[in-house]
Amino acid sequence: MRQRSTFSDFIDSFFSNDIYPYAAAGHSLSASKPAMNVLETDDAYRIELATPGLCKEDISIKLDEDDDLVISFDKREEKSDGTPEGEGASDSTEVAVAENKPVRYLRREIIHQNFVQKLGLPDDVKRDSITASMENGLLIVEIPKIKEEDRAKLERSIDIK
Image (cartoon, rainbow, N blue to C red; front, side, top):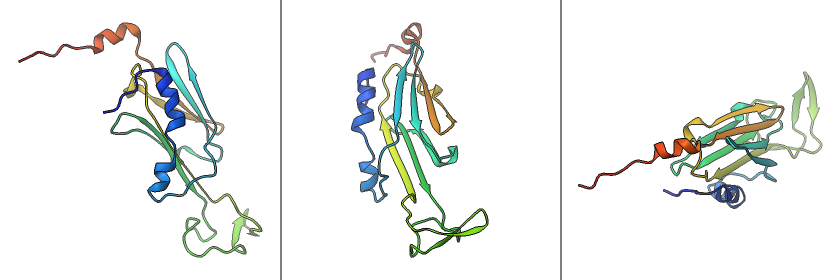
């Protein structure tokens, strides 16, 4: 199991782990990564990720088998017939329905967005207390730190038999 031990390693994981392994698995790439802020207080780390146009159902946040935090989303716009974009033949004259009026796209670039970011967490966090919320197109992930006085409680002796 890979462990991150410092805040510096935590920050480095934002820039070293990207969506390319996801693309190699046959998924399409988005044009760019969403803007991200990482903040630190005495009590927690906070990740702010720009997610305009997404709702919480589009986003997945989990801890993987290595105990790394994985944030991902996969958003497909639907064609006017209700099938996800990218399935079936695509035509620039395709008619969609907007506000109950037919619309013909002259140029359509915003069709499919996806993103995967794997973040190695530092050792000083409470992995079972991570929370997330969305506010005005901003995903906020709060990662509480283990208090210094509680760190000693986490240590345990192992008997030799």
